[in-house]
Image (cartoon, rainbow, N blue to C red):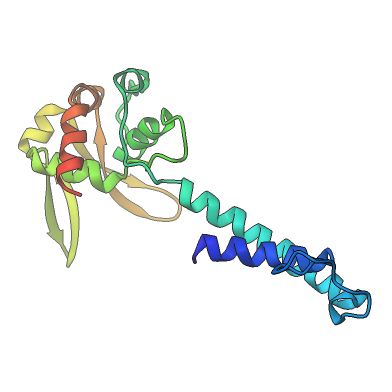
Length: 183
């Protein structure tokens, strides 16, 4: 959706609802169809809808317009877990230190791709589905697979001990460089 065209349409509708010709700026005559009460109510209704669309589109344009990045101060602010956790929990903590919605959030897939490139994770096929599993090096660094059972399902999850979480944060600039080079 073209934000500028949407803004212009909303502006035109708002002017007509207020009895102003959007092209000339003149007041619309009392006998003009646009001065009918039903038409005016309709124009105000459409104007409100268009305003909402403009706000949503403006937020979309602003949100995630800057590539993911963290400063040294932000990296230092990321709290590590004492206990083993999934990569999604680690990524959630990393994204919590972002100061604005304009910066794209780090994705689990991006950090996993980086860990694959370093040889800590590998893709393994099981029953036609690809899974990411720690390599021998990953196991040595503090990654392991744990079988989880919930009332709803059973699954295996890769968990990251504190040592591996620390490795990720200590080498965060390397991750940022990887992301930059693999756009």
